[in-house]
Amino acid sequence: ETGVTQSPTHLIKTRGQQVTLRCSSQSGHNTVSWYQQALGQGPQFIFQYYREEENGRGNFPPRFSGLQFPNYSSELNVNALELDDSALYLCASSWGDEQFFGPGTRLTVL
Amino acid sequence: RKEVEQDPGPFNVPEGATVAFNCTYSNSASQSFFWYRQDCRKEPKLLMSVYSSGNEDGRFTAQLNRASQYISLLIRDSKLSDSATYLCVVTYSSNTGKLIFGQGTTLQVKP
Image 1: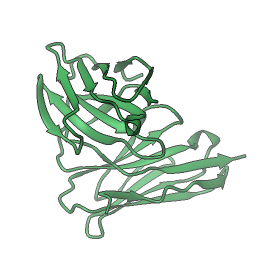
Image 2 (image 1 turned 135 degrees about the vertical axis):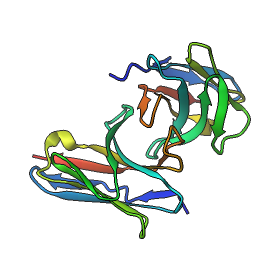
Image 3 (image 1 turned 180 degrees about the vertical axis):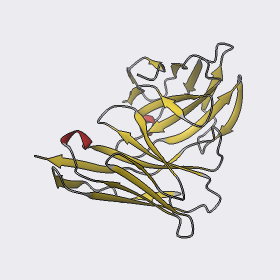
Image 4 (image 1 turned 60 degrees about the vertical axis):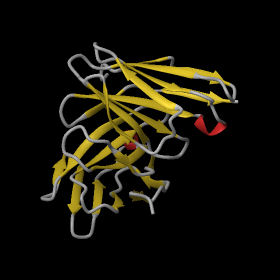
């Protein structure tokens, strides 16, 4: 196991609701990246946090936002959920080149 | 055009077969290259990095052709346990940059 944990494992929401997903990075890792993986697709980069600051963002609207805390754990918040937000949300922590993925949160939007 | 393109497959092969996956990337500024493996409903895990000189790890061989912007993965003597989705990944930065994933190629190894 990578030591990266995510919660919850599964979540069901309805359109228009808001959701917060959580990620605890591997010990000593100061960088957390978030990815969205739709069914049958590769993961798509959402954003990255380095030492509590956003350090790069992919092509996602502002209703996707995040935080990183002093202990390097992180949150992904999604407002005004849409059906297309249904996906596996992965976080990955890193110190050097290699990114270690958590098991993901599977979000279903009805 | 997608930044990283892969044939999604599925590739159905018998045990013991040799199978090759190909991947192309569009940005010539890409710096680092990887193959990740993802089992069904699990997270991606790094299989191997890919270097210009080519590299081998047991039954797995990865090749990079920068001029053609092409990456390959060869699996020899396929095992049932090799059944998974193989994701081609590039980055624009060699240090914790964003990972750009291909769609993934599904391999099913049959007895």
